Length: 226
Image (cartoon, rainbow, N blue to C red; front, side):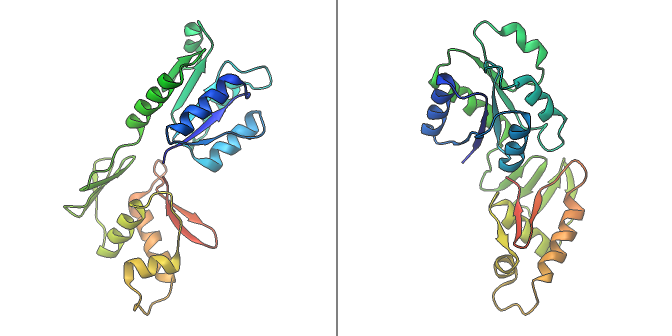
């Protein structure tokens, strides 16, 4: 289920947007507090697939400041932004480059859902039965091959199985014991330290300063970033 973070001052327009997106099956988040700090923290916490920013909001929500903060952050700058623009606000789009898509007030709920769906298709590749894709990482299940940004990555069998399992369950947290059971089997006599060692080796091969795929959940285990 795709996650959409809505940022702005709650009014009738945003209530209609939230209702339409929820009815379309999306997970919709809306921070209780307004302001750049609250929006930034909510986005870091939720890691949404799309951020819908209301540029028609009242003065207590500075949409421009929120947008600039997102574009400066190394984790959020790649998150697509969908803009809700004031009626006749085409010219204002020149001051907010990089918008994924937009819609004008008064919004049409059906058009909003259709545009969000189209934008999601661009930014979230659909996995086929033979491939698992996450950003620049591609797992070719039929060939047992892994590439990052087109470059082939040499993995051991256990590293490959660990990566494939986590990537097949994006966003889900697994404990070290669960991963040990899933990849090595219940009769494996090694400790959970084995999981940590393989995760570290795996990260050294597939991650760099531009790519982060696996997240450590402190005192619990690991998850593949959705």
